Image (cartoon, rainbow, N blue to C red; front, side):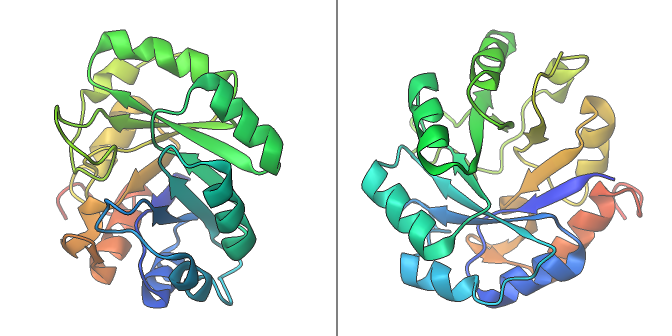
Length: 217
């Protein structure tokens, strides 16, 4: 069964809806420029009495050790998602420092970007494949943009990976079919407005990703 990550949660209600829908991962964003950013205090409150069925993912962008120390201490995430320009060496350093599963985001726009997948597969526990942000954009992810999923057909994966980038309840089943993804991630695709999750859309997305409803239903 396809595992789902709902990213950019901002309330305990969001987390409860994510768990009730059957998602495996719940993402919290620690990046001040994002409309989905949460403070350490809010994040600590959100994960209080966290559902046992959901793994908490802390998303950071080129965070230094001080910020990562604070996040790990306050939230005790199950996974760190590195969504900035972290080098392979920095990715390996973070993985060794915290002993927590690390997922590195890699932006894809064309075939030339695929080489980075192999490089980061050597130093991360998982890869998140996202659409490369638009030129001049200030958000490394969460832009609601997709890329050509056929670029990933028959790719020789070395580690578990997760598909992101413009996924919605209406297109996620097709994305899974084309790429063979066993894990998918969405944020913008389940929002009623920028930064505000729609719990009904979360449920629809999970059902669609796991094949219980047809595309567009």
